[in-house]
Length: 434
Image (cartoon, rainbow, N blue to C red):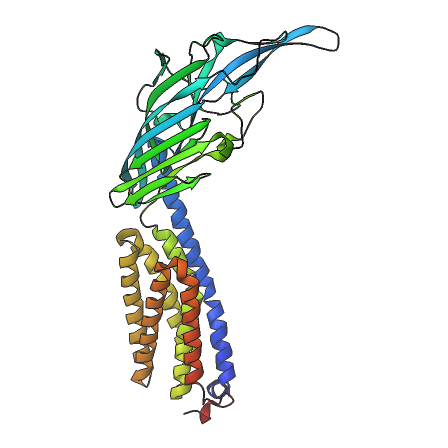
């Protein structure tokens, strides 16, 4: 009785197919979680490599910090001395850098590393600072320091010396205060109130990974970066004013004014979030297999639904009834496509993995349909539909900017085709169709 009802009721079979489509979302979700897990494992491997070589670097400075002694008194009239810190930023700052890149692998995973040769020069001036020598406010120029913020000191590969007005200063590790930067190197220049201008220059040989960033601490900041890496992404608060990009590498130039950022040229005893204004470049992988595989898996419901629709229409038009188990096995094969794509893409890249996975699943489902169907045209139709679906999905994945437009037009064509094929179907009785 149940078998006869299943064969005679089109609506019942439609309900079963729809239910099985939803059930298959469970293994699809599991596959997506596996993709994310493998992506996280990749990130952990890259972080481990970066820890040994050098993490992403952020360069801030140099910044002149002057201790200021201030005399005050408590409620009982007892006097005591407090030390504040005055931070003075450069009047001009020029940064030129070249990044030499290489890749290091740990197992299946590859990290992008760079060795940067950075030249930094500029001028510091005391002309714009209001008078500080007051009755209770005295700067200690002899204890002034120049601080250069570096986010990962392990990346420094050569001793750093700074030339300040002809004096050569050796760097020491650490910062005197954390008002501006938390990690970096420090120089002790000879600063006095009589000399109002100080020119400086120094070089950094710096290891890092993935990205390099700069903070525009100069009243006028100019940054020029070049590298042979072919796939950069310019990131942060500012885009370069000019850039060039081709297969031989890239270069970018930034010109940042004091008015473009949200912190002043000098301040005392206040913390400004200078990190909000950082900018620079990220060295992208040419292909992120996990990101593309995850994007592909998000179309699983579409692939499963349209494949089941092709089976169902073949049933209606040829009056051949397939068992729900047949649908289940085909659905599992469709889900397996995404797992196979993930596994292969880790070894041979996304494009080749996609072709191999699509051909494998298409052949498997096509031969299975040929074996279970009475009419050979059913297997031919299903195989052709799967071929179109995998081709259509690949085109959508390769055109991110037009994905919504291509997808919408594709669904419109599919809907119109289904309408035309079923225009004479009697949905109340499958026996009358033919």
